[in-house]
Image 1 (cartoon, rainbow, N blue to C red):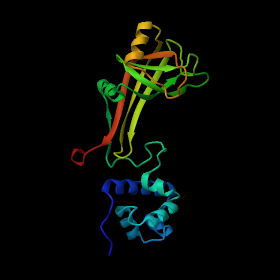
Image 2 (cartoon, rainbow, N blue to C red):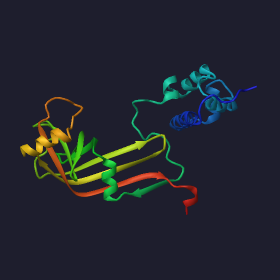
Image 3 (cartoon, rainbow, N blue to C red):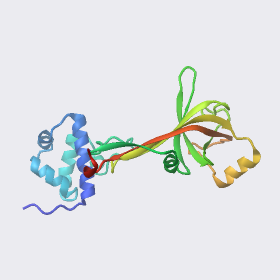
Image 4 (cartoon, rainbow, N blue to C red):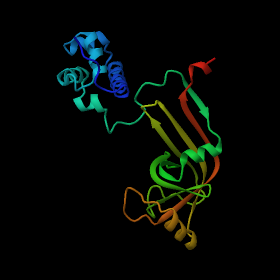
Length: 227
């Protein structure tokens, strides 16, 4: 007689999604996966709900059949890019107001600065902070992200929640300017210090003065609200 599942539903759901996503990549049906793992389909389904502690060897066989390590199957890939899971059951794309965009961007974080280039545009990740309705970042004096004053640029920030299958993105377009006023630089260093993860001397402070701010949020539409 099979015992009751020993893992919490959220963990079981996450493992089940990883299995379903990997099967889709491999073009492997549930019965074929069960055969490759050397077990019946009902037992495989029970095992997923029971959790790895119930039958660790069974999970090893499932992982091998999917071409994953045991840890990748149980905990997911810690370094994989977000957004590889399946979408929400009833996804909805919602436009953000400008105020909501700034609320999402928050005070600081990591974003992407898009700059014109020769011959092609380029995008760089930068640590940023928000200062009085503008975006500020630091870079090398002659670094790739040290664009000239007056350059038209775009700045993008996003967040993805694989577990909830939701996320948002904000796009800010505007003009770059150098911050060279001593008092402003002192204030930024004191109150909104930006510490680039890349390290090294980053003496060039650049402000993005927005001309347009837009954003989108993707979420799941409640069944009762669907048309």
